[in-house]
Amino acid sequence: MNKHSNFVAGLCLYLLAGLFAFNSYADEVTIEYQGGTYIGEVVGGVPHGQGIWTHLNQKKYVGEFKDGLLNGQGTWKSAGMDSRIFNGRFVVSGRKPKKLTKAEEKKEKRRAE
Image 1 (tube, one colour):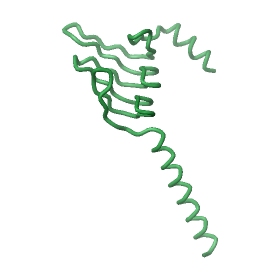
Image 2: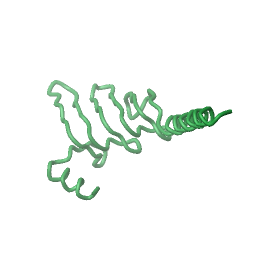
Image 3: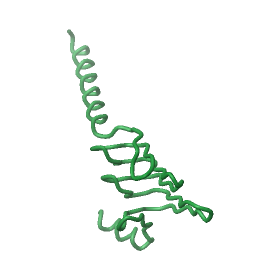
């Protein structure tokens, strides 16, 4: 084998190893979760990463999850005749999702820096 062949073989092995590592971390799947259906990335059997959760009563969240909880940028649509749509950063406060205020978003951003 020449140097070029060794390089190409090494590169292919590196890319395959990276692809395997990525896929073993977060897979996009469909699961029944918290009284609804979740489609998205899962780690350890719970939503983690980007996903869509739809409750049986048509509540819906599209966005980021962390350790099975709404956490990060997303869109929440409430259910019922007076359904509302909320866009922004979300955290779970108790058992209900909470949209962060602009002041809370700034505070969280400063803390992350």
